[in-house]
Length: 133
Image (cartoon, rainbow, N blue to C red):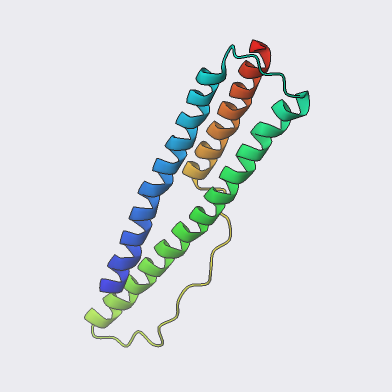
């Protein structure tokens, strides 16, 4: 049971850090836009196009790794809970097998919400900055 608790605590702690990082990125985008608004910036147009793409790709890579780790921790916790139930019931659970590593799961609403919000914010901020000059 301790192993199941450890896996769940790892999932929960990572989820807290995931949201803190995401909210920090969103705040950084908005605050940077507010700071740079109206300043005489004259970068080429490809910068305004590539900036949202780069921000979204980096945030997406972070979220994909976190999402896979979340899924793995939940699978391990569920597996160890099932083994604990078998042992407490007096049955032999057989060999303990760790579940296979997860792939990226786009069914997770938090992943989709965070990535969509990052795309909207980064495109909106780049558009506002491009039009302010």
